[in-house]
Length: 115
Length: 115
DNA sequence: GTGATATATAACGATATTATTAAATGCTTC
DNA sequence: GAAGCATTTAATAATATCGTTATATATCAC
Image (cartoon, rainbow over all chains, first blue to last red; front, side, top):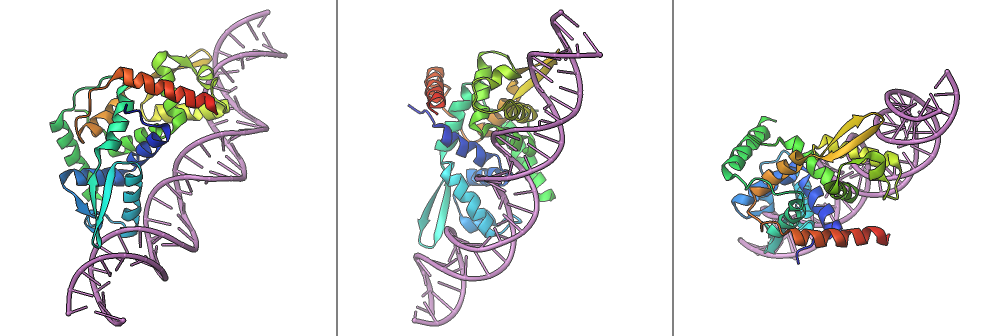
């Protein structure tokens, strides 16, 4: 019974609508990270990233676990799955081509450093 | 090469983040509709719906075709597919259970009329 | 052309989002 | 406990979003 509530979908899609947050998610795809490590590559204050992370956590896209004085961030598949369930109702899209996604991420990373 | 640009994903996810717009999309799943028919079930001005439709069109989630004095709205799979490609990079989610989606839509429709 | 219909745009207000800097919290180390 | 590191929260400003009503535009029917 995995029926996401409307409000939850609001949170999830709104969270995904920001390029900084999507970039954070793709970073976390590699590995779990501490907040300051997440923030490092961004030309943006740590406070801003901290708030982005809170948005992602509220949407259930990541989970944050405080251990000692550092807060670890890790992907939480639940959020993405909920969005995926909803979107799935609109049609079966091509099975994901991971190579395609790799290329996309690379292109995206290029655009990050260009700024 | 179906690599959505970051800005495009911004538009798509932001468009999906609004419950009114998601409801419009699920209505269009049934059939193509004129703008005023889309607006009918909403407790909201026609102007507001017109703008929601513009947002959906800008994101490539619907297409609008003017014929005479009425503007027809139909789903455009491109937008959803682009989002799906991006999300796919985060893991393979359950193959969509359409019955599950049906139940979700029904529950959602209930919540619409409850207001 | 007149008038009704279908839709879009403008102007505006309320609220939300995203960033900043400064201050607060909390853990670790000495 | 004092100092420092990791993170969050508060106050604030700029901009975006979402709704409203009023007005414009375009088409159809007579």
